[in-house]
Length: 590
Image 1: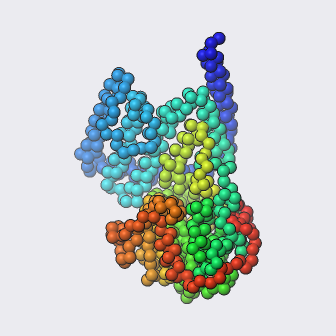
Image 2: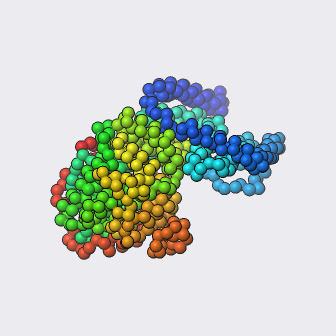
């Protein structure tokens, strides 16, 4: 037997073994899917009214403007026919001429075979033609109202992205090449990853290597102490790194949709550490991750037992009459409600407020608005009432679909088709380390603030009394992010503009919801815009804004220092219940 024969025999043995493993794993997959917990189907997609409105709008377009519809159809068929003829010629010759115009770069089609192989090129080009035709048809539905148009366009794009040829094994050259090169081992490893995710990750793709990180060991390592604990939160005081500190302490409220350590990932990009190093006494709230026993907790409870309690405790432990505050995302929204309540109560204990990517005016919520229709919110309400909470998996999946190619399809391709292990990426690890929301609180937020725009309309009650944006009178600084897909920067701008404070600073950072905030000066990566002119129209403000390359942190630090009093001797914690980052961030309950 020749060496080649031995190699072929070995390859056949490996292939046979891998096929057997695929059969075994397939059986496990079927079993795991059979026992997977069912949930309200309304959480998986829009209601039928979206499709009905889209169909009715297209029919109306055909009746009212048939020339435009026919023009689009002729254009589509003309491009398709040209493409078909070119593909036939390429298949006959066995080669492709270089494209005259490659068009915009699409990282899904980075493999050279998409351009050099006639079969793959045909599939790619036809997919792109189909996608263009469908999205153009949706874009021309002039009879749709703006909200419906955005929803139809969004869900149409979801369907278009879902059917990309890269998402299917038989039409993904990367997956096929690797399967051949590994004698099918990559498919076995991919199926193992899929079974693992169905069994232990609620069928969501694992985005990061779970073994690569440990909170308190290589994440959230800034020194500090838990100095107060309630059923709702732990209060962390961070150890001063300077001999003297500003007199007025700073209290940071992170969102409770995720965990606080996004602001303390590692020393090089920790906003918390950076603020401590600037000479501030920093306190941070670490929220509990609620279970069903928190089902009746309301937004009022978060304000009273979370925000007001933490504020009072910081004042008590430092002996200061006033504090500075920061609210990030949903915590920024709730900080606004708290400040409006304090103004009504003639309480001046908050000296300044900083809002990070916070919406208080939901008239223009951006992309996330597609999930705020009654179809989704009704489904959320039914599921939350049944479970006592809105699960972290639903929240994570919802935000992921706003960037489906980056956060769903590409990770799934790498994990399930290529058999790759999840990357050791700290931000993706944090993204997967989500939290639940109490049922009542989630509905207060979705119905009263998002759907009804209650804060901006002056109809949202705090402790039974309606508050409005003009009630917020303290000096404030707001940071929004230019490409934020969760808190649209124009929506953030509109809310800040309506607040009653005379002292306002608005900063627009480049990048998105996380990267635009976690943007340390040492990176010199994303810049920011400022404009001292009165806040009028958002786009006019941006047109007149001054751009500065680099992080917004130093600008904000200087703003905060001006409102933080004199220098005093660095503070020591009054009481220590444990070391930072505490126990709640690790999953402990009160």
